[in-house]
Amino acid sequence: MQKAIPYMQIRGGSSKGLYFNARDLPQTIEEKDRLLVSAMCGRGPSDVRQIDGLGGGDPLTSKVGIVSLSLREDADLEYEFVQVVLGEGKTDRTQNCGNILAGVVPFALETGMLPAKGLVTEYRVFMSNSASICKVRVMTPEGAITYAGNTSIDGVPGTSAPINCLYEGITGATCGALLPTGNKVDVIEDVPVTCLDNGMPVVLIRAEDVGKSGYESLKELSDDHQLKEQLEKIRLIVGPMMNLGDVIDKVVPKMTLIAPPRNGGIISTRSFIPHRVHAAVGVLAAVTIATGCLIPGTVAETVAKIPNDHSGDLYLVEHPSGGISVSLEFETGTEIPVMKNAGVVRTARALSCGEILIPEEEKL
Image 1 (tube, rainbow, N blue to C red):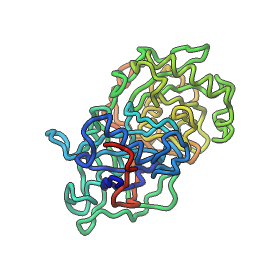
Image 2: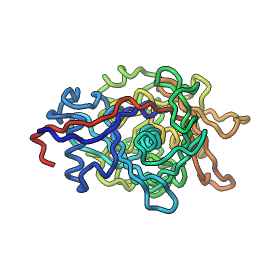
Image 3: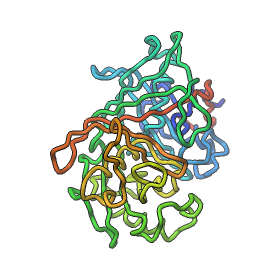
Image 4: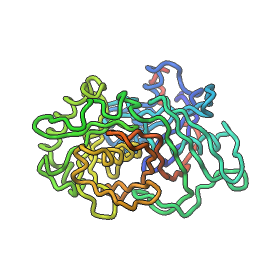
């Protein structure tokens, strides 16, 4: 008999993932990871198509959110993000995912973990991957969550109800500092880079410094094996410098090529996650990239365009599918701005629910 596990599949932001109540999963990491890999890949963990599982054959659809009620005084829910690494049959927990986070409160409401509070429901979510908090606000007219609305986000068709996410205490959450190497610029393999962590470990590289324009298509960059080898060599060197240790088997740091904006944003990006080209840009990666644009002396300063009259501290980070707006609140007056919090608007939609069937040969 195959083993049945309750689940929901939710599109969170421009990603899609499987969501589980933590109590329905094995308690040991080893058993839990075997189940998650099996859920995504079925009996073919090295199959990049994930044809025997519920994964969609792409890093953006090979994601998991594990949710539980929190015992912390400062949080209502706890959320663990797990990336099932495409084609490798393993998992990675070294990062958050702001897109999958957008589905956490909807999951809790849909499954009855928590009640709706009125027209708008807000809960505090403890993100266990980075030990930080995000306030997530969803629309709940008539006492139930709605996905219908007029908010659009690039990379997702149609419009939906807005989901507001306000991050607290994410600076240096993974690497220990906003500038984990202690420098605004490091020269690695003759390439100037800026290493940052404001919610996501990111390495910023001017596209021109690696012979690119920064406006290439996904296919152009995906087919450029020489570039990908160069970026991976840099990534493996900066990993220990960013307090991440050996990153050969990790999905961070995110390598990001930057160029001047073309569509009203502050910067244009092409991100690698870490070996495949991102069709957009990660939510917390966008937060970190926007932060790097605001710090004088980084590699981003020479290509970013920060308007003098920007409204509401809202910054648009351009990516191949459009852009993502990030709000940043920070204290000035110091050489390096002190980041207080960051906000983004996402959308989500529940896609399916029921029981996922784990192959019977998988001993759990």
